[in-house]
Length: 210
Image (cartoon, rainbow, N blue to C red):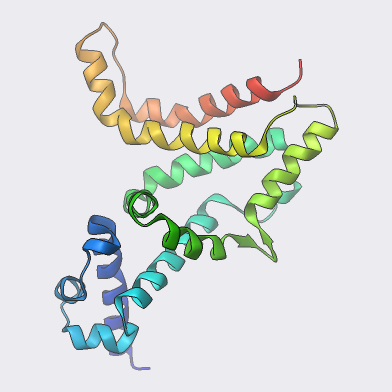
């Protein structure tokens, strides 16, 4: 394929990601993607055939990117106590460093959950195993060794996700409002930087055996 063709395809991918992030799949049109990419609609159809196929391509790429940013080779060798803060820190750093990726994931989970999760889940593997299987294994291992209390693994995963995601959504708007009505002062960047350590400590203190 010629360089000009590669460049055109990449422009379309980039434009599609931007438009899907802003408007979701339902609100996105091939016409808008073509306009944003600076090409005609025929070229978009030439490279990706349909909006469904283009959406699937972008969702797969975003899933693989999120996986690479959060999970790393060697994570399977860490104990739960070591792995928990590492994953939380990477998760928060990824959301802060890639806000458009974060917006795309949250938006599609809210508006196009079934289709998006089906695409997303296919990409979440390390080797031949689903990434969450490693995390669930670490929880069971720590429980059997008596290092943590009886804990519902799914609830722990939900705790990690909710304690990471919700503050990043509300902190920029909520903290200034709180500061206006109290004597509290804050540095938003510092608060978010400290968030990973706080969440990891909070969760570990909640599940560890005394």
